[in-house]
Length: 354
Ligand SMILES: [Zn+2]
Ligand SMILES: [Zn+2]
Image (cartoon, rainbow, N blue to C red; front, side):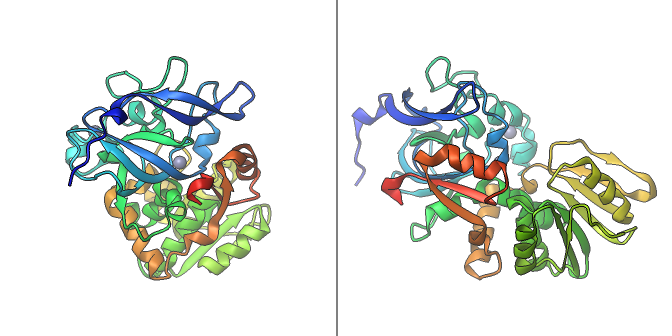
Protein backbone atom coordinates (compact mmCIF):
# COMPACT_ATOMS: atom_id res chain seq x y z
CA UNK A 1 0.00 0.00 0.00
CA UNK A 2 1.29 3.41 -0.92
CA UNK A 3 0.75 5.95 1.82
CA UNK A 4 0.83 9.62 0.90
CA UNK A 5 1.74 12.29 3.42
CA UNK A 6 0.78 15.55 1.73
CA UNK A 7 1.92 17.64 4.69
CA UNK A 8 5.44 16.33 4.25
CA UNK A 9 5.87 17.96 0.85
CA UNK A 10 5.93 21.37 2.48
CA UNK A 11 9.29 22.84 3.49
CA UNK A 12 10.55 21.27 6.70
CA UNK A 13 12.67 22.48 9.58
CA UNK A 14 15.98 20.66 9.84
CA UNK A 15 18.99 20.89 12.11
CA UNK A 16 22.14 21.75 10.14
CA UNK A 17 25.77 22.40 11.13
CA UNK A 18 26.67 25.78 9.65
CA UNK A 19 30.23 27.07 9.53
CA UNK A 20 30.92 30.46 11.13
CA UNK A 21 33.71 32.98 10.58
CA UNK A 22 35.96 31.12 13.06
CA UNK A 23 35.75 27.88 11.02
CA UNK A 24 33.58 26.35 13.73
CA UNK A 25 30.33 24.55 13.12
CA UNK A 26 27.17 25.52 14.92
CA UNK A 27 23.84 23.72 14.71
CA UNK A 28 20.88 25.84 13.69
CA UNK A 29 17.30 25.09 12.80
CA UNK A 30 16.75 26.06 9.18
CA UNK A 31 13.98 25.63 6.65
CA UNK A 32 14.67 23.18 3.82
CA UNK A 33 12.61 23.14 0.64
CA UNK A 34 10.62 20.09 -0.45
CA UNK A 35 12.15 17.51 -2.82
CA UNK A 36 11.71 18.24 -6.49
CA UNK A 37 10.56 15.48 -8.84
CA UNK A 38 14.09 14.03 -9.22
CA UNK A 39 15.05 14.47 -5.58
CA UNK A 40 15.02 12.24 -2.53
CA UNK A 41 14.65 13.47 1.06
CA UNK A 42 16.84 11.48 3.46
CA UNK A 43 16.86 11.41 7.26
CA UNK A 44 20.58 11.47 8.00
CA UNK A 45 21.67 8.80 10.49
CA UNK A 46 25.44 9.36 10.30
CA UNK A 47 28.11 11.16 8.32
CA UNK A 48 31.86 10.70 8.06
CA UNK A 49 34.22 13.66 8.23
CA UNK A 50 36.55 14.00 5.23
CA UNK A 51 39.37 16.51 4.96
CA UNK A 52 37.54 18.19 2.10
CA UNK A 53 34.83 19.18 4.59
CA UNK A 54 37.44 20.90 6.75
CA UNK A 55 38.74 22.93 3.82
CA UNK A 56 35.25 24.30 3.07
CA UNK A 57 34.44 25.85 6.44
CA UNK A 58 33.51 29.29 5.09
CA UNK A 59 30.69 31.22 6.81
CA UNK A 60 27.27 29.85 5.86
CA UNK A 61 28.49 26.51 4.50
CA UNK A 62 26.80 23.26 5.54
CA UNK A 63 29.50 20.63 4.81
CA UNK A 64 29.18 16.85 4.95
CA UNK A 65 29.51 14.48 2.00
CA UNK A 66 29.77 11.01 3.54
CA UNK A 67 26.19 10.77 4.69
CA UNK A 68 24.07 7.68 5.28
CA UNK A 69 20.43 7.53 6.23
CA UNK A 70 16.86 6.49 5.64
CA UNK A 71 14.74 7.66 2.71
CA UNK A 72 11.84 9.81 3.86
CA UNK A 73 10.20 11.05 0.68
CA UNK A 74 10.81 10.74 -3.04
CA UNK A 75 9.96 13.00 -5.97
CA UNK A 76 7.55 11.76 -8.65
CA UNK A 77 10.33 10.88 -11.13
CA UNK A 78 12.34 8.79 -8.65
CA UNK A 79 12.10 5.07 -9.33
CA UNK A 80 15.06 3.42 -7.58
CA UNK A 81 14.20 4.00 -3.94
CA UNK A 82 11.15 4.37 -1.73
CA UNK A 83 10.49 5.71 1.77
CA UNK A 84 12.12 3.51 4.40
CA UNK A 85 15.01 2.38 2.19
CA UNK A 86 18.51 2.67 3.66
CA UNK A 87 21.03 4.59 1.58
CA UNK A 88 24.70 5.55 1.58
CA UNK A 89 25.48 8.89 -0.10
CA UNK A 90 28.37 9.63 -2.41
CA UNK A 91 29.41 12.38 -4.82
CA UNK A 92 26.86 14.02 -7.15
CA UNK A 93 26.65 13.80 -10.94
CA UNK A 94 24.02 14.94 -13.44
CA UNK A 95 23.16 11.54 -14.92
CA UNK A 96 22.54 13.04 -18.35
CA UNK A 97 25.77 14.37 -19.92
CA UNK A 98 27.95 12.26 -22.24
CA UNK A 99 30.30 11.21 -19.44
CA UNK A 100 27.40 10.16 -17.21
CA UNK A 101 25.75 8.26 -20.07
CA UNK A 102 29.11 6.57 -20.71
CA UNK A 103 29.18 5.33 -17.12
CA UNK A 104 31.90 7.83 -16.09
CA UNK A 105 30.17 9.99 -13.46
CA UNK A 106 33.54 11.19 -12.11
CA UNK A 107 33.99 12.97 -15.44
CA UNK A 108 30.49 14.53 -15.34
CA UNK A 109 30.69 17.89 -17.07
CA UNK A 110 28.77 19.42 -14.16
CA UNK A 111 30.93 17.79 -11.47
CA UNK A 112 32.26 20.99 -9.94
CA UNK A 113 28.90 22.79 -9.96
CA UNK A 114 27.05 19.84 -8.47
CA UNK A 115 29.63 19.06 -5.79
CA UNK A 116 31.16 22.44 -4.96
CA UNK A 117 28.64 24.95 -6.37
CA UNK A 118 26.31 25.05 -3.31
CA UNK A 119 23.25 24.91 -5.54
CA UNK A 120 21.26 22.63 -7.79
CA UNK A 121 22.32 22.46 -11.42
CA UNK A 122 19.84 25.21 -12.38
CA UNK A 123 21.36 27.52 -9.74
CA UNK A 124 18.43 27.24 -7.31
CA UNK A 125 18.78 26.24 -3.67
CA UNK A 126 16.53 24.42 -1.23
CA UNK A 127 18.28 26.29 1.60
CA UNK A 128 17.48 29.75 2.97
CA UNK A 129 19.27 32.83 1.66
CA UNK A 130 22.82 33.01 3.07
CA UNK A 131 23.14 29.27 3.70
CA UNK A 132 25.41 27.33 1.33
CA UNK A 133 23.93 23.83 1.11
CA UNK A 134 23.87 21.12 -1.60
CA UNK A 135 27.57 20.39 -0.84
CA UNK A 136 28.39 17.27 -2.92
CA UNK A 137 24.65 17.24 -3.57
CA UNK A 138 23.99 16.38 0.09
CA UNK A 139 25.29 18.71 2.88
CA UNK A 140 24.98 15.83 5.32
CA UNK A 141 26.22 17.56 8.49
CA UNK A 142 22.51 17.86 9.17
CA UNK A 143 19.45 15.92 10.26
CA UNK A 144 18.14 15.78 6.72
CA UNK A 145 19.46 16.01 3.16
CA UNK A 146 18.01 16.41 -0.32
CA UNK A 147 19.82 14.15 -2.77
CA UNK A 148 19.23 12.49 -6.15
CA UNK A 149 19.39 8.94 -7.40
CA UNK A 150 22.83 9.74 -8.86
CA UNK A 151 24.46 10.16 -5.44
CA UNK A 152 22.66 7.53 -3.42
CA UNK A 153 23.36 3.84 -3.09
CA UNK A 154 20.69 1.58 -1.62
CA UNK A 155 22.03 -0.83 1.00
CA UNK A 156 20.61 -3.75 2.94
CA UNK A 157 18.65 -2.74 6.03
CA UNK A 158 20.49 -5.28 8.18
CA UNK A 159 23.77 -3.35 7.77
CA UNK A 160 24.93 -0.67 10.25
CA UNK A 161 24.44 2.67 8.47
CA UNK A 162 26.91 4.59 10.66
CA UNK A 163 29.67 2.14 9.75
CA UNK A 164 28.89 2.38 6.04
CA UNK A 165 28.71 6.20 5.90
CA UNK A 166 32.40 6.86 5.15
CA UNK A 167 32.41 4.51 2.16
CA UNK A 168 30.99 7.36 0.06
CA UNK A 169 34.17 9.40 -0.38
CA UNK A 170 37.50 8.72 1.34
CA UNK A 171 37.42 4.93 1.36
CA UNK A 172 36.04 4.81 -2.17
CA UNK A 173 38.82 7.12 -3.31
CA UNK A 174 41.64 5.02 -1.85
CA UNK A 175 40.31 1.59 -2.74
CA UNK A 176 39.00 2.74 -6.13
CA UNK A 177 42.38 4.16 -7.14
CA UNK A 178 43.97 0.75 -6.55
CA UNK A 179 41.17 -1.36 -8.03
CA UNK A 180 39.57 0.81 -10.73
CA UNK A 181 42.24 3.26 -11.88
CA UNK A 182 45.51 1.36 -11.52
CA UNK A 183 44.06 -2.14 -11.56
CA UNK A 184 46.88 -3.25 -9.27
CA UNK A 185 47.63 -6.95 -9.75
CA UNK A 186 49.49 -9.80 -8.13
CA UNK A 187 53.21 -9.07 -7.79
CA UNK A 188 52.99 -5.29 -8.18
CA UNK A 189 55.02 -3.00 -5.94
CA UNK A 190 53.68 0.27 -4.62
CA UNK A 191 54.22 3.09 -2.17
CA UNK A 192 51.33 4.82 -0.44
CA UNK A 193 52.18 8.17 1.13
CA UNK A 194 49.89 9.17 3.98
CA UNK A 195 47.89 6.63 5.98
CA UNK A 196 44.68 8.47 6.68
CA UNK A 197 41.44 6.85 5.58
CA UNK A 198 42.29 7.20 1.88
CA UNK A 199 45.78 5.72 2.27
CA UNK A 200 44.59 2.88 4.53
CA UNK A 201 41.87 1.98 2.04
CA UNK A 202 44.56 1.84 -0.66
CA UNK A 203 46.71 -0.42 1.54
CA UNK A 204 43.80 -2.83 2.13
CA UNK A 205 42.85 -2.84 -1.56
CA UNK A 206 46.47 -3.49 -2.61
CA UNK A 207 46.58 -6.47 -0.27
CA UNK A 208 43.34 -7.80 -1.77
CA UNK A 209 44.90 -7.38 -5.24
CA UNK A 210 47.90 -9.46 -4.23
CA UNK A 211 50.55 -6.74 -4.48
CA UNK A 212 54.01 -8.02 -3.56
CA UNK A 213 55.31 -4.87 -1.94
CA UNK A 214 53.01 -2.41 -0.16
CA UNK A 215 55.04 0.35 1.46
CA UNK A 216 53.21 2.85 3.66
CA UNK A 217 54.74 6.19 4.61
CA UNK A 218 53.42 8.45 7.36
CA UNK A 219 54.58 10.70 10.19
CA UNK A 220 52.52 8.90 12.87
CA UNK A 221 53.94 5.63 14.20
CA UNK A 222 50.54 4.45 15.48
CA UNK A 223 49.15 4.72 11.97
CA UNK A 224 52.08 2.81 10.50
CA UNK A 225 51.52 0.04 13.03
CA UNK A 226 47.90 -0.22 11.92
CA UNK A 227 48.93 -0.07 8.24
CA UNK A 228 51.09 -3.14 8.85
CA UNK A 229 48.15 -4.97 10.38
CA UNK A 230 45.98 -4.03 7.42
CA UNK A 231 48.40 -5.22 4.76
CA UNK A 232 51.49 -3.00 4.45
CA UNK A 233 54.58 -5.16 3.89
CA UNK A 234 56.92 -2.35 4.90
CA UNK A 235 56.50 1.02 6.60
CA UNK A 236 58.52 4.21 6.47
CA UNK A 237 58.34 7.05 8.94
CA UNK A 238 58.54 10.51 7.41
CA UNK A 239 62.13 11.73 7.62
CA UNK A 240 63.50 8.21 7.72
CA UNK A 241 62.82 7.28 4.09
CA UNK A 242 65.19 4.77 2.60
CA UNK A 243 66.22 4.79 -1.05
CA UNK A 244 63.47 3.37 -3.25
CA UNK A 245 65.23 4.35 -6.44
CA UNK A 246 63.33 3.09 -9.43
CA UNK A 247 61.82 -0.05 -7.93
CA UNK A 248 58.10 0.69 -7.77
CA UNK A 249 55.22 0.31 -10.22
CA UNK A 250 52.98 2.80 -8.47
CA UNK A 251 53.07 5.64 -5.99
CA UNK A 252 49.79 6.84 -4.53
CA UNK A 253 50.15 10.21 -2.85
CA UNK A 254 47.36 10.89 -0.38
CA UNK A 255 49.39 13.36 1.67
CA UNK A 256 50.27 16.14 -0.76
CA UNK A 257 53.52 17.04 0.95
CA UNK A 258 56.02 18.32 -1.67
CA UNK A 259 58.93 16.28 -0.31
CA UNK A 260 56.84 13.14 -0.62
CA UNK A 261 56.10 14.05 -4.19
CA UNK A 262 59.80 14.11 -5.03
CA UNK A 263 60.41 10.86 -3.18
CA UNK A 264 57.55 9.28 -5.05
CA UNK A 265 58.88 10.31 -8.44
CA UNK A 266 62.35 8.95 -7.66
CA UNK A 267 60.89 5.67 -6.48
CA UNK A 268 59.07 4.84 -9.72
CA UNK A 269 60.45 2.39 -12.27
CA UNK A 270 60.34 3.08 -16.03
CA UNK A 271 56.71 3.35 -17.05
CA UNK A 272 55.64 3.64 -13.42
CA UNK A 273 52.60 5.68 -12.45
CA UNK A 274 52.19 8.16 -9.68
CA UNK A 275 48.67 9.07 -8.58
CA UNK A 276 47.92 12.30 -6.81
CA UNK A 277 44.73 12.27 -4.79
CA UNK A 278 45.31 15.75 -3.50
CA UNK A 279 43.95 17.86 -6.31
CA UNK A 280 47.20 18.53 -8.21
CA UNK A 281 47.19 18.10 -12.00
CA UNK A 282 48.53 15.29 -14.19
CA UNK A 283 51.75 15.20 -16.25
CA UNK A 284 54.11 12.89 -18.15
CA UNK A 285 57.64 12.52 -16.78
CA UNK A 286 60.84 11.11 -18.24
CA UNK A 287 61.28 7.35 -18.86
CA UNK A 288 57.60 6.87 -19.60
CA UNK A 289 56.53 7.60 -16.08
CA UNK A 290 53.17 9.28 -15.61
CA UNK A 291 51.41 11.37 -13.03
CA UNK A 292 47.65 10.93 -12.83
CA UNK A 293 45.12 13.04 -11.00
CA UNK A 294 42.24 10.83 -9.90
CA UNK A 295 38.81 11.74 -8.55
CA UNK A 296 36.83 9.38 -6.30
CA UNK A 297 38.93 6.40 -7.42
CA UNK A 298 37.17 6.45 -10.82
CA UNK A 299 34.25 4.83 -9.06
CA UNK A 300 30.63 4.35 -10.00
CA UNK A 301 29.33 4.49 -6.45
CA UNK A 302 26.34 2.23 -7.14
CA UNK A 303 28.77 -0.54 -8.11
CA UNK A 304 31.82 0.15 -5.99
CA UNK A 305 30.18 0.76 -2.62
CA UNK A 306 28.37 -2.63 -2.73
CA UNK A 307 31.70 -4.20 -3.74
CA UNK A 308 33.46 -2.66 -0.72
CA UNK A 309 30.62 -3.85 1.52
CA UNK A 310 31.00 -7.42 0.21
CA UNK A 311 34.75 -7.34 0.77
CA UNK A 312 34.17 -6.02 4.29
CA UNK A 313 31.66 -8.79 5.02
CA UNK A 314 34.20 -11.31 3.75
CA UNK A 315 36.75 -9.94 6.24
CA UNK A 316 39.06 -8.64 3.49
CA UNK A 317 38.40 -4.93 3.83
CA UNK A 318 38.21 -4.23 7.57
CA UNK A 319 37.66 -0.49 7.20
CA UNK A 320 35.61 -0.43 10.41
CA UNK A 321 38.93 -0.52 12.26
CA UNK A 322 39.59 3.05 11.03
CA UNK A 323 36.42 4.54 12.49
CA UNK A 324 35.80 6.61 15.61
CA UNK A 325 32.20 7.53 16.37
CA UNK A 326 31.07 10.86 17.81
CA UNK A 327 27.67 12.33 18.58
CA UNK A 328 26.76 14.99 16.04
CA UNK A 329 26.73 17.46 18.95
CA UNK A 330 30.50 16.89 19.31
CA UNK A 331 31.13 17.91 15.71
CA UNK A 332 33.83 20.49 16.49
CA UNK A 333 35.76 18.02 18.63
CA UNK A 334 35.48 15.42 15.87
CA UNK A 335 36.71 17.97 13.32
CA UNK A 336 39.66 18.88 15.54
CA UNK A 337 40.58 15.22 16.09
CA UNK A 338 40.44 14.66 12.32
CA UNK A 339 42.53 17.73 11.58
CA UNK A 340 45.36 16.84 13.94
CA UNK A 341 45.44 13.16 13.05
CA UNK A 342 44.25 11.87 16.41
CA UNK A 343 41.66 9.75 14.64
CA UNK A 344 41.79 8.32 11.13
CA UNK A 345 38.11 8.58 10.29
CA UNK A 346 35.60 10.38 12.49
CA UNK A 347 31.96 9.43 11.96
CA UNK A 348 29.18 11.61 13.37
CA UNK A 349 25.97 9.97 14.57
CA UNK A 350 22.65 11.40 15.59
CA UNK A 351 22.04 10.04 19.08
CA UNK A 352 18.46 8.95 18.37
CA UNK A 353 19.78 6.62 15.65
CA UNK A 354 22.85 5.33 17.56
ZN1 LIG B 1 26.92 14.34 -15.95
ZN1 LIG C 1 35.72 13.58 0.72
